[in-house]
Image (cartoon, rainbow, N blue to C red):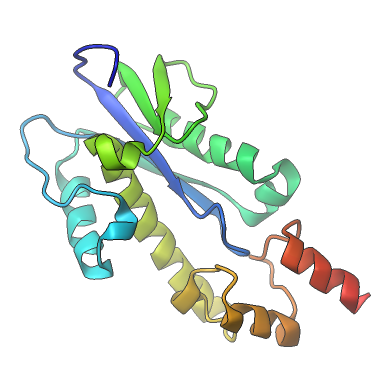
Length: 195
């Protein structure tokens, strides 16, 4: 962090930019200074069980945290970049404690009423961003498991909406459901072929 010592730093990260289905989910976290947090790394580097454990600890001990999303429909209307910034904005504005500064993973900083900066690979260097990455990943994975029950046949609980061979094959047979991002190329192509 380049701007000196700050008391309340919110870390922000998102998951779900690349899938063909489901929302993009963002989390904002202000960690407690009185707790130590083990396992704060990029969420993709943790096993699902470890992620669940670390996520529960963050939720129980952080000074503040908030999860927010932009739906598949909002992604289609806005585009994935703008929908991601919207989810991040919602997460920060949903915090019950006002941050002094906001650190956002990546290259882009959403429109916020707080000072802050975007940090490339921030989930590897900033604990609060790593915490946000873990919360967002655990929440989105659970959500995709729920969608798997609502829309059986796509395998959402396995691939989380990413364009795997299984998912693409299911799309050929079933067509898209309401959680699919119709503006994404594989689904656009499929819809054109069907018409």
